[in-house]
Length: 200
Image (cartoon, rainbow, N blue to C red):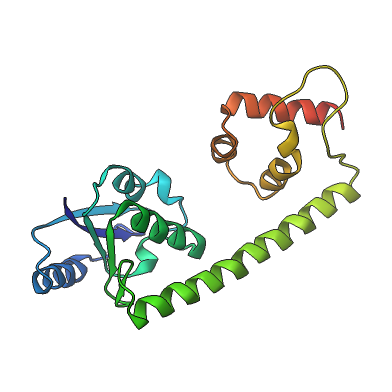
């Protein structure tokens, strides 16, 4: 088990000393043991799985603790924050956020309200993404782009996901993420997309 003080800053000159002191005081009051600080200087818009936070969630054992100054240090995306909250709950890792007085493992009013509001905002965020996706598909369709599995020999297990993959491509989601989502290599994904383009 470990107690981690997680600090993310987006600029090299951002001071983290006050955040460290707040985390140490919190850990001392709640008798959480020695704190090991993990810092990363990276934009919160970057997928947490590709950051130090993702590595932490993969390696920390059940019973560990993560303390962060505020939930925006986890990610700038509400959807990703909710995902991290769910992952820590599932793995038995306690997540504390000092600014919001939040703990993923308790049923306090503050934590319940925070999760409820985040879930609502995440739903709105997903609906806005869906709307932008439909608008992008409509624009491509109006420009003459054809969708669906191309005719001809050979089938791909990606065929049934064609519409979803094209939506993600239209949203400029990195190919590495799309490939991981559908369990294929990046090379296979590019071959699949190239085959679609040849049939347009």
